[in-house]
Every structure is written in structure tokens, then in C-alpha cells.
Image 1 (cartoon, rainbow, N blue to C red):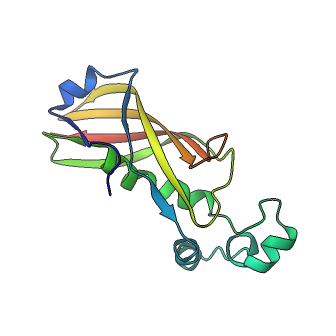
Image 2: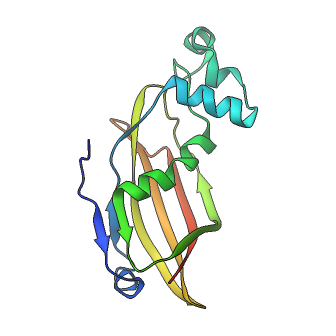
Length: 156
């Protein structure tokens, strides 16, 4: 169920006018233990802090299993899709990341959402290169679980 209304941006030119502002905030999504386990299987990262509930209760400072940082990062595109739609774009691609940090864990069973600030919009041939600051927060947490400066390219 959507909490935030999807922001529709009519064109890349209209998006360029939003540089320096928060363009959108995503819906909440749950990071379940099952999602964490599936990510562990997909990546081969089976470290106990992600999968062993009993050991995490005993030995982890978090008291439970936690999501992989890269799982949190990989959920940013789906969160961005729930926050905004940029029209007049035939194709968009991830272009890279300038900086990614994981200041706090995402605990299994918790919900996260992301806010998106458009830091830059630079013209490229037949489109624009966008620099986004995505801040992912866990519901009820005091600090973000991921802050990332991400690059994408959108083509008309």
C-alpha cells in the first residue's frame, strides 16, 4: 500500500529544474529474513550475521540477523520507482556510484524507505546524467542505514 504519492516529472528538462531539492520519498518495504537469505544465496555471502538467528541473538551487537549492505543498496531502484516517474525517457541505466556508506544495519523484519535528492543533472548526448543522493532509513532508527551518491543516465 502506497504511503507517498508517486511524483510524476513530465520531462528531463522539468527534472533539471529540481536540482538541489528532494524529488521524492519511497514507500516502505520490508526486509524480511527470507529476502536476506535469498540475497545470500544469490551472492554467495552466507556470513552468520545475515543468516544464523540464534548466533546473532548471542553474539551480534544488533541482537538479530541483519541485511547485507549491498542488499540495502540493491533495493534503491525499486524504492526510487515507488517515489517518482520521469516521463519522456526511453531508457535509463545505472552509471555508477561516487560514494556509498552503511552507517547503521537493517535488521531482519524491519521496513526501510529512501529519500532522493537530485544533486546534479548534466546533459549528455540524447539525455541527461543524473547524480542522486539516496538516503535509506530503517523505520524507527535514529540514523540512516545507507547513504549513497548514485549516477544514472536517462535517454530520450
